[in-house]
Image 1 (cartoon, helix red, strand yellow):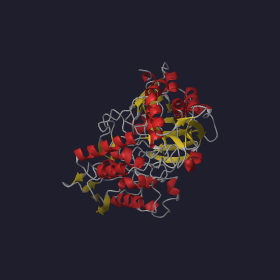
Image 2: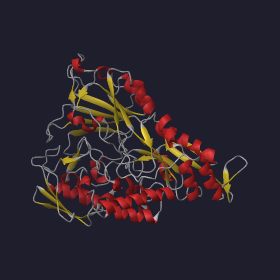
Image 3: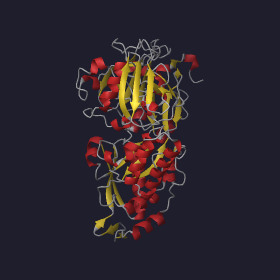
Image 4: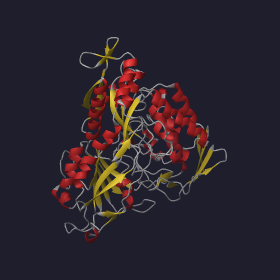
Length: 538
């Protein structure tokens, strides 16, 4: 969870229980009792839960919200396809006008018709400064949004924002419901109504999100009639419950997913991601705010060892928010592992080893705390490896576990082992993470990074649709992160999911830092088809 997590992102079961009821464990949701017939329900384990279920406050902004639809959606190949819009938008030659024709006959789950007014209401409410949406700047390009009749919506932009169509996967809220409530605190934030394939039936905070199929869904009622997202924050517990049969599927770290490798009744799905792990280096700290310390840590860390030992090869080194296999990655910004070079940088900056080997400058000891999220084994392992590498350079990092309630108030001065990342346009990855004016705005710019050259490049990249100009802007951002890295990026992580082999139609997309809520093989659970007993394991 960082700037991008939502940004990142989400994604347990019956109240207070460690296991489901005996009947559910035996064959949860079976349409044929205990006969082993096809299942019409699924229970999956995710790592985190959302802070809200309101699109107006940020839920569903990247698609796959289950309860809602956007004007557009991403298909399996991350190509845009129509959803609430009947077709892809008509875009004016100057890139400043986007016209959407809406799908006919769509209703919200309460039976009310979906119209252009709902689209206008959603976007205008998000852009209202009184709405608590930390991702509002992602829609900065919008000058105006208006309805033309019930079936057409026109967006007018301030500047030609190349990624605008991708932003319209944002979930649409019903005006007739939310306009009668406080947008920030009303009942809609926890019991929403949408047009999506599933209807929320309950949210037990810290335990589970329960859904039932929407029988009037415009794209057909889902065959999986009941869907539960069990919120199991501890990786080991999630694996244990999957093995015990409490869960039909779960997101797992590589070492735990490996334990299911020979299980003929389950399949493992690997998804490429933009999901990174990084260490925030707060500007407002005497040690982490020093550019020499930042640069030294950037090359003291052994990223490849983390990929090999922590991720067991399921990932790659990260040098910034953009993965090395992305077409937007700036070649030449890879950082070598160079302990001697890190020591030299610190020596030249006046950080001299003390009697215990930890460096000191002007009476300030080179030490700082590093927080990671309790129960998250991947973050813990990354934090410990990072601290070990730093110690070799003479920097003492004290790792500490905590909840976000403990960590968030400390982010201005304390380092955090954080995560983030979003596929698609480079603006998605970098603006909320690095823009100086967003420092202190929730999980945006957690490091309080302040680099005027980066600020200008982020605006340049956002405000043009010229590919060459955008390339130059985002290359500048990545090269500045070499000169003054306000974060130490460690790895990009492949997501691994283990799922019972009970359904056809499972696949994965290129994923964000999401923790399994909107991603994973259940990104399209509405399209799963139950297998008969004889089909399993084939």
